[in-house]
Image (cartoon, rainbow, N blue to C red; front, side, top):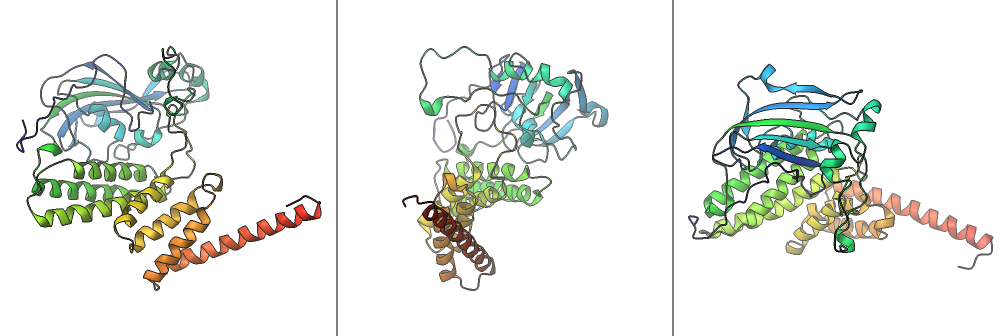
Amino acid sequence: MSGNGMHTAPNPGPPIGKVHDISFDREKTLMRTITTEGQGEEAREGSIVTIHLEITQPAEDGQLYTVFKSKDKNPEGLRFELFRSYYSEAVERTILFCKPGSVIDSLCTDPNIAADAQLGVFARRIPEGAQKMWCAPMGPVGNAQGATKDPPMMQPKPEDTEPPWGPPKYVMLFHVLLDSVSPGNVPMYQDSYERVDWVEQRKAWATELFKRGSPTQPFWYPRAMRHYKKSMLDLEVPCEWQLEEHHVQRNQMRLALHLNVAACGLKMPTEKPYPNLSTPKMHWDPQHDVINHCTRVLDVDKTNVKALYRRAQGHLLLPQERHINGLAEATMDLKRALELDPQNAEVRKEFRRVKDLQKQADSKASSMYTKMVGTGVEV
């Protein structure tokens, strides 16, 4: 029983000795196996942990070679706060909900979450000579991701049907010994004072990650987005809000987090350079997130210029075949933003760009019409 009177079921913990999908959207891009279970406090967000880590990748001959071993450079281990570090997201998720003394292996095929700027370790494409072993359905990755699993006894719904398994382009393996764990954060145990402070800290950390993003290191943007979204979830965990000012702060943070998620989505590529191998989310992309989160803000504050501006950009980034009215909707948002803030230089610049795009679209449509009329095609 928690301090605020709510009953909480115990965490069942991760399966021992079995391969388990721990990727963010259950896309099988991060598969974990706990070979030895420890005892004591579970590693949670906010826990101070110490780990011993070895990272390997396939070489040209298909054998694994070591790209980092903590005992060589850090014999005392790597010590950091879980989900508030610059270490690889794959490493952080590998030890989540594990106990001191646990030995864990994980296999990652997403170079974004495998990237470790702190250690200077980044995923490389699987060498041509190693592809026969590592890219086969019965190979290490295929086995971990269930490439040859038996068909289900009952036909799944279309939206739950996974696409065919595809060979990976990247793979990185992590071998971790979790040495020590301090108590972490459990949002449902917090009062409103703690909750406001906790979410503010998480939001500030996500902003730090966002600022590190660049064209050469774009993986910081989706990482920041996930932290903003986690902060939003923490904000909604029930608790007794003692002060009216906490309600006000909560509402302000909620709007700010929606806008920050949208800012991350605008920095992410419209086409994934390495498609997820196994996910029913065939048509999800971050630009939809931009539109959805900005719309949530405008549902509450119809005069929010930043939300109008970012939503317009989201409309423009979506491919026309999936968003036929994108240009028109972006124009309406920018016109409204200019009505509210006529001197906003960014909005004025984007509005000029939209007008140029509209002229190009009109010219293209006119040219097509002329050709159709010239060939005698009925219109």
